[in-house]
Amino acid sequence: GQVSPLSVDELAIETTISKEIDTSTETVPVTVLTPSSGKRIETRGVYIFTNSSAGEITVKFPNSNIIVAKLYCSKFQYQAMPKIRFVGATDEPLQVDWSGLDTNAKIFVVVVYREV
Image 1 (cartoon, rainbow, N blue to C red):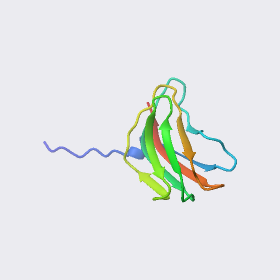
Image 2 (cartoon, helix red, strand yellow):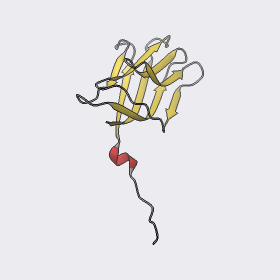
Image 3 (cartoon, helix red, strand yellow):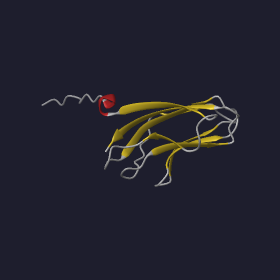
């Protein structure tokens, strides 16, 4: 017999969140995503944008010390990582931290993820 290709809609099993961080009013680190109790976050994609021309921005699982994405603002003002998979620990949040950014810089983060 003939095998048919399986149609898989990845977005149907993934969720997307976005967060704008105003570094003039928020303090390091900022939690952008917390899993439901007893669950873990499994990243599928991360996008970071900033208007800063200096400093560094990191998206990470702080307890596991897993860096999911990093942006070096003196070289780039955005980072697109559409196909990445990192899994945090049970009940571990996903955080954004930064250092050395321009005064009053803004950060926009989009995370595609699943809870597992």
